[in-house]
Length: 289
Image (cartoon, rainbow, N blue to C red; front, side, top):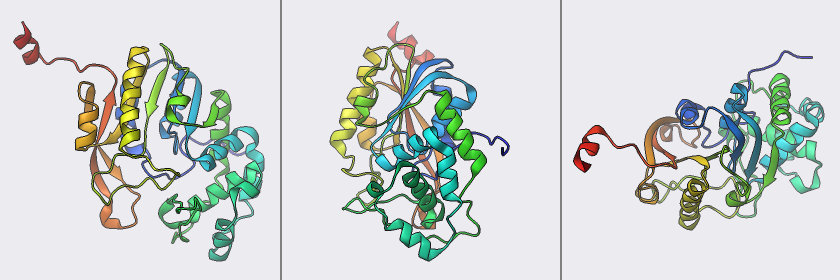
C-alpha cells in the first residue's frame, strides 16, 4: 500500500480556490453538520475542510457530469481508476485518441480515468468543451506530467467515503435544498465576467449568465432566512457589487494561473461574500446613536 498523501485536489481546475483557501476557511464555521458545495469543481475547499475534520457529512454537486462521475468513480472503486490510468502515456497520438472518446460510451471508471488523463496532459490543465459539448483542449507541453498519482487518488477516495459524500449533477438550488441550521454552504459559481471578452463558462453546457447570477444572489438571501451559514466567491464587478449589497463583502487578492496566454495570469481581486449583515464600525455606530 503506497503512503498516504496530503489531501488536495486531483485536478487542475479553472477558478480553483487553493490560493484563497485561508480566507474562505476563516469565513466558514469551525463545526459543520452537513457541508454543501453545489459548484464543487476541483474541490479544494471540500478537501481542506475534510482534512481539518470540520464537517460530519457532505453533499457535493456540479453541472459538469464528467466531473461528478470522476468523484463517484473514486469513491466507489478507486482501484479500477488507478489500474486504467497506469495504461496511459504522455503521448500526443494517445491523447487525441482518448479525447475523441465519448464519455457516455465508457463505464464509470473509464470515464474518470479519461478525465484525469486529459486534465494532466492537455494544454495548461484546461477543461473546455465546444458548442456540441465535446472536450476540445489541444495536447499540452509538459516536462513530465504525473498521470497516475496513486497515493493522492486513494486519499481522495477515502475522504469521499468518510464524508459519506452525496454526489449529484444538479442545479445549485437543488443541491442545497435540504440545508438547515448547523449546516454550511460554499458557493463558487462560474464568475460574472469582468469584461465582454472574459466570460469563460465553457467547462459546462448552458452557460451561466446574469439571470443565473441574480438567482444565485436570491439563494444566498434564502439561505440566510433559513439560518444556514453560506459563503460565496465571485469576481469583483459592478454586477456582483450590486447583487450583494447589504451582505458582508470582503476583497480577496488571488493568483490566477490558468489562462491561454501567460500575460493573462497574475493577481486579481475577487469578492468573498458571507450571508450576514456587515458589522458596523465604531464610527458608524457613533453616527446611529
